[in-house]
Image (cartoon, rainbow, N blue to C red):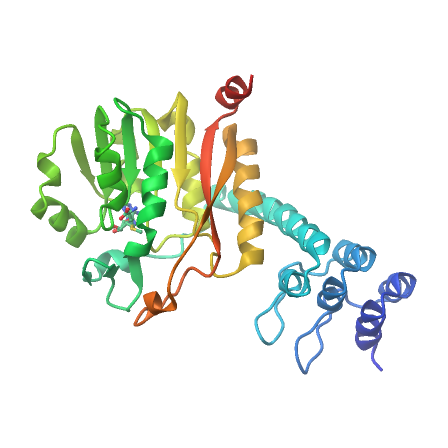
Length: 334
Ligand SMILES: C[S@@+](CC[C@H](N)C(=O)[O-])C[C@H]1O[C@@H](n2cnc3c(N)ncnc32)[C@H](O)[C@@H]1O
């Protein structure tokens, strides 16, 4: 038996001392069995063995390694109902990503080249009342998200507010914002097909509405400050969202409210849980903002994904982020 296999066996049998001894003797904490990709961290997570999980994490076992079926240790804990171990792994993921984020920001400052041009904005879009699709069969926006958009509009807009929405899509959040009679309503949209649909529907002639055409990355310097901000783009990832968040101190008024479409890793409950804590921790540490999540149930029929190449939602609940400045949040609580 190899030292890696011995480590896996000790982790499976919950022998913390033996795990520690093997690690000292040179066993790799990251060892994964050839046949199925299972690691010591996965089996310890499945058994809810916090001590073994802690030993392995401390010795450098990657919190997000996947077995051959694409499952990580957090999913093993989740499937076995090991909530404490699930939370232990979420924390490990958040800590690792906070450190990684700091490293990435350092590299960005050193001039690391970007990932390359975005192809989404060059594709023709098509759609109907149910969905907006790109040429690759990816759903850009879907009608089942309507109640969520209504809740986001409710969260960021009161009558007479100055609001900003980034990403028009099917116009659901903007329609919900209009019904709340904001004083001004700025919409940033980058896709030419979406912009021409907005114009066909008369959005450029609505009182108080200003359409800012272009990528938010390019047009933000033209903007003032807002009472309410909502962010929901497509074809972007957490690095982009984090970049947008860096602008919030300049865009959000002292008592303002910010929210974003919370679809980060929404096809995986464990990675989604890591993002919930990671985004809140980064908004707090880097931007001085406090995040609360409002839980909303999701009801959808599997038929919704028929013909869609990116079924991006698999969770039973939606965590709607409500973000305030720390000082405003303190006043709310007092
Ligand atoms: C998911 S949809 C928004 C859906 C919208 N919240 C609704 O209620 O219908 C995303 C939109 O963001 C736009 N978009 C993507 N990247 C963008 C960027 N960098 N700047 C501005 N808009 C962008 C897309 O063209 C698309 O219209």
